[in-house]
Image (cartoon, rainbow, N blue to C red; front, side):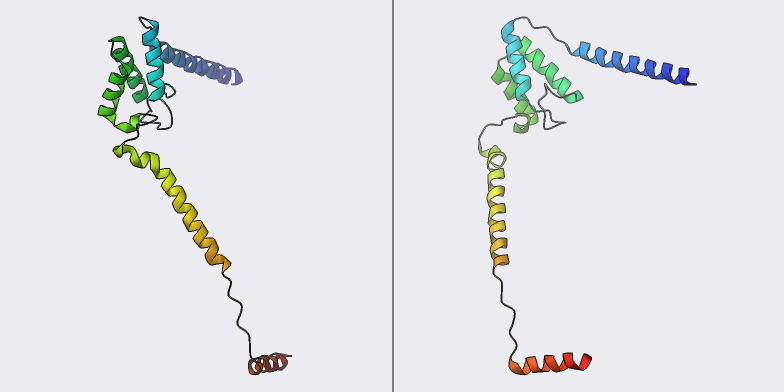
Amino acid sequence: MIKRLIITLMASLFFIGSAATYSDEAERVTFKNEQSKSDYTVLVNELRCLVCQNQTIADSDADLAKDLRAKVFTMVEAGQSRSDVIDYMTTRYGDFVLYRPAFKMKTLLLWLGPIVFLFLAIFFVIRWVRKQSVITPPPTLNEAQRASVRDLLNKTD
């Protein structure tokens, strides 16, 4: 029973390891010159994975990222410049595909949004703190009210 379990685990590990090696082998590309390799490396590190959204296409294992890397490779190997590749990607996927989008009217919210939200948060926190710091003193009792409270307390004893 234990032998069978160990053999099954070893076989599973072998197949998982070989599948990972196969996928890495399929992704390897060869460049015709160093400039193409340099352009490719810069581009895949400038473009955002649209599936992961917090990784470049160089870092992502998503299928879309693999397709985008392949498209970048074919465009670079075809002799297209970095700006041609970036223009193609932004035309197709929008400015969000860029890890650092250009500062223009369409991306104004991307650049200024966090600053606006920070100032709004600071404004509301200051308002809330000021409202909390205004403490109204408890109402004072006049002599007649104090006497009636004393009478009520003495009656319960």
